[in-house]
Length: 227
Image (cartoon, rainbow, N blue to C red; front, side, top):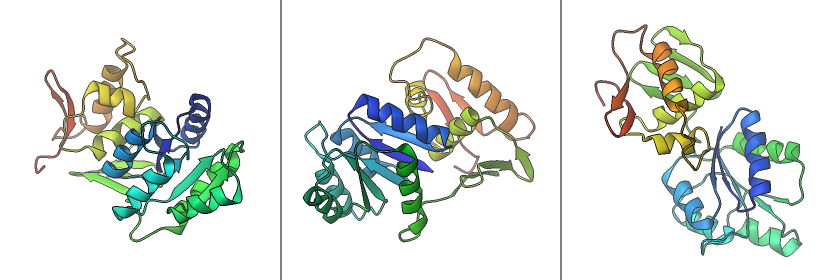
């Protein structure tokens, strides 16, 4: 699953992000309400974990009310230190699907998020990505190009998923550092080059038509000829 965590407490956010990634999920993080609203409104997520008290001029309630006003039905789990009955009622009335108070056990948080996504709303989030003859199944975490299965390491899978979600767009190194490695600084290493090279060996080299392109002085683009 692709999950957005909107949490300003660094320790809590780090704990949740680490646990979700170890469970095999792709995670984005925002540490304030304004950035959280931007991400939630502009990208597709299977679930959102949302704190009530947030900096940035937009708290959790307002963020969720804005999303629901835009007909965004992504399942939302409130994660908050505000645990009184009135607090929980306000969160649910604002459009929350579940409410978990701090402190919490990660196993319970994970179970609640997975339960929310099983319920489904509308057509639900996409479980498959496709660019040309390249297909990714997000549920089985498998990748095929044409009839050939492609075996990827977890980080390679996350990198390819990010590129496929942004197919036809230039993806900068900064975007990859933040979206795939969760770095909010330049580590001054060739980690991106190494993983892009490995991905090309698996996704492009055995096939006639390349999909992964380098955009000089800009970044990378995954595209099929018809994009």
